[in-house]
Figure 1 (cartoon, rainbow, N blue to C red):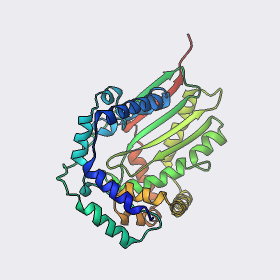
Figure 2 (cartoon, rainbow, N blue to C red):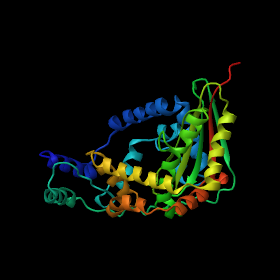
Figure 3 (cartoon, rainbow, N blue to C red):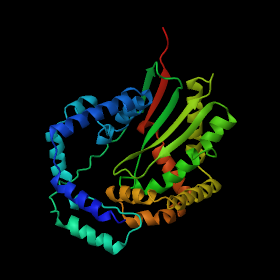
Figure 4 (cartoon, helix red, strand yellow):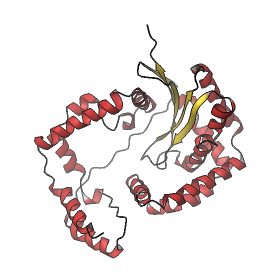
Length: 328
């Protein structure tokens, strides 16, 4: 904490006085290209996820990879970096999160001393593209000689906190815990333990995207199990929860597990600032973060079942298959 003032001074200066030259930017562009080659172009699983993302979002920029397509990265220049910097870097478009052994009044004093001198900018309005109605399920198959373990993924377009349908966000977090939250979840118990078809199975969902999100399922077969059998078993489990819903006991257990996770997160010096920073930059408030355990606690079985039937619809889904390339 005795170095906090130095960091504040450096960051405030960097917000307004950044100097970029070709000697600095172009080698970093090459680093990003190599990052893409190693993490995407050389990873069939990453290639499949990137393609599924492009198929899931018909209109929204979330269909574009964060790192960018290779041909776009190659066209980046010092001028494009500076244009972005001048457009978006301003104190009125930033969130400052400070955690550790600090005094609140001292932090406020330093923020006013250093960031207060940086002039505000007329930041462009962030226009939020919307997704059109989705009418057809999509299917993506990627075969590669690099694949040793096949896998199956199904992604459904789902609301986040801020998007249309956001009232389902807390219920979807409960559903995710019930279906894919570890070794006691429905999918793991059924596909891995009871039926013995899968080596792994689970689900994923995050409500913190600024706009729409996705509800994802994944599984990999055990040796000797064909993908058609595994996919039929996964879809049978999804059909079961759509038809019959979840139980009071499952919802109660999921609530306890999620609320406990929020308590444990406070043990980490890095976790809480990360949660608050992500929330504040994605349209949420400090109050939203603090109220999360209580809001999870008010979710009902009826709300979970309504969210399930709203989101798990074939026409707003993408199925991805990752397969070994057949030898010729």
